[in-house]
Every structure is written in structure tokens, then in C-alpha cells.
Length: 172
Image (cartoon, rainbow, N blue to C red; front, side, top):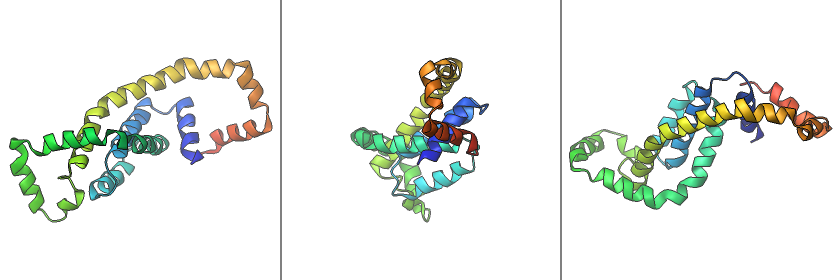
């Protein structure tokens, strides 16, 4: 569990492209909010494994999204009901149900449809916010922490020095 955290901090402090980190956070929130008991989640997960994003950030944001998703289930249910009952989309939903194995995606579940819709709506704001936070970290927080006397003293302790060594040993 510590490896994704180490990878994230290494990416924040190296020349990793901020877009890779931001896309990973957005995709992770998307996967974290969508219920994991259907084929849609697994299809999306496997697809996103082949996209060039920061995998440590992906894992951490999936965990974050999974933790907060139950809090929004009533919202996802009402949003999913609204999306699934749109008159203009009813023929498309009927056609989708006739395709073999599409029903395993549970796209007609109100919570699954609502969480997917909400996470698609949140994709761009999460991307922008994450990119801004990476900029702030690199511009202000990381240099300030490296100059802090307390942080410098902590780096001299054996345990912290060993943990800091992990940041240089972990491959991205």
C-alpha cells in the first residue's frame, strides 16, 4: 500500500508531466465512483491500464473515490433514474439490451448509470483541480519543505532516511 504513495510523491517531485497525474486522478475518481460489481467497471479498468497515466495516482484516487461513493448513492440513484428515463434515449437503451453481454455492464441500474454520469461530469473539474494542486506543490510546497529546518532534521534520522531512500528506488 505504501508503493502507490511513494510513486505519487516521486512523481510530484520529478519531471512527470502534470497532465499524466491529473488524468490519473480524474480516471481514478471515475472508477472509484462507479460500482465495482459489473462488467462496465472491469472493462473501463482494463482499458485505462493501457493509457499513459500515473498508476500510483490512479490507485490512490480509486481508493478515495471508493471511500466517498457510498455517501453519494442517493444522488447517484436520482441522477441515474433521470438519465435512464429520458424519452430520447429509450430506443437506444432497448437496442443495447438486445446486444449479448451488454446487460452484464448493468448500465440500466440507476446507481451505476448515475455514478457514471456524475463521474463523467466531474472528470474535467477534477483534472483542472489536480493540475493546479500539482503546480502549487511544485512551485511553493516542495521548495518550502526542503528548506525547512525541521524537515532537514527529520531526514537525518535513520528511519526517515530509509523511507526517503524508497522515493529514489521505486520505478515509475
